[in-house]
Image (cartoon, rainbow, N blue to C red):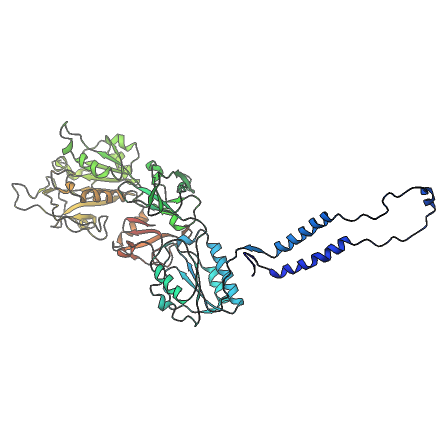
Length: 582
């Protein structure tokens, strides 16, 4: 680099061509040689003509000047002029390249690889040793410095990962084998803050110069917002509000964008722009969605996989209305309060709600239904029927003949804490680890005063998914075709227990509704215990679906920490539950 004041030239040797300009001036100004005289007889006809300009014409000086200026400008252009160039001191020590490899680096990954490849090629030409640190969180010991060109093959094969950038915990141990001399560091950053970044930057600055290359485009991420109503949150470093595509299979089974969601008004959060995105879609469409993705973004942070928290089931509620003034005592009131925040409720007679094609039907103390055959067919085709006990069911004299029950029942029920009973109300036993209520805490103040008793049977324990402290069934379940029949052996109001008054009741109903429409293959995973989650489908760093190969079940405690090297973004299963790790 040649500097002439504030102007620099990348190829200064080309400026030597300017010496040829005076020679070119002389050549252009030179007179042509005198013509050779040849006598031609016809010239006699021109006798007597007078030449008014006997002196040969020359090129005007201003035209010569313009031509020379054009040639000089071309020479200067080829010399690579740079205004106020930043001249890097010549480095002869080892080279370290730190390359952020989280999902935020995916959008311009090819440009990042090109920048690093150029640096390694220059280091190889200068004979400098180099090392490449891929900050993807995968375990590695001390970095090995080697000839720079030996790192090119690993660089070309590297890919961004579907989790955030992660650096080794101890910079000193990672750089223990660095050669002597000033260490030059080229850090290809993804623009995000991550653990150990400040410690690494300080450690590298103590060893030599550090050049940080920021990302070329703003980062935008999508996340599932917390709350009872499923919604999304768009976060970006700029004010852009791109559309959010809801992607899933169409009626022909072809995956495509089924809808486009518009972000809401922006709010500022620590310098970032945050926009809410409402998932305002019909249940039939929402339940087909497999993922949400920011339009024109190609990284895993721009994708939100849909799981049981996003899908809103259509739940039909069937029960007898009470007289005016007693609605707050009805079982349907407690069920409505528990299901309304997370489902789309339909209420009415059984024949009417069957026509709406619900995912779940809840019957509150109903027997002798005229639509039993239609209801049986609906369950066999994949529906979930949830029944609650009550005085009517307990007093039904043909209870043993009542269809659509998961277990055989005793007539009359059991009065545990009544005036004529010898016992005290019973509490709830801890939920099994392989059931739909696994992990829910059992409050000490929940008690049951009356219940419908199940007839003893060899398979009664296998059909029980919740029980009382004396091991009597509280909730039983059985399969019918592709669907399920669930019976809660108490009422849905406070007549037989205070369970509907507790915060546990809405959580249990949400868990039951989430098991609707399970396929036989999904039901086969019931033997998996709750403490572990098995990956079913994962994403790569670019947000594309990938196969979950070579991954082991993840402990629930680790899954709660978010994505990482052993738990990439994807869909994880535990028993009947499906959870998206985004």
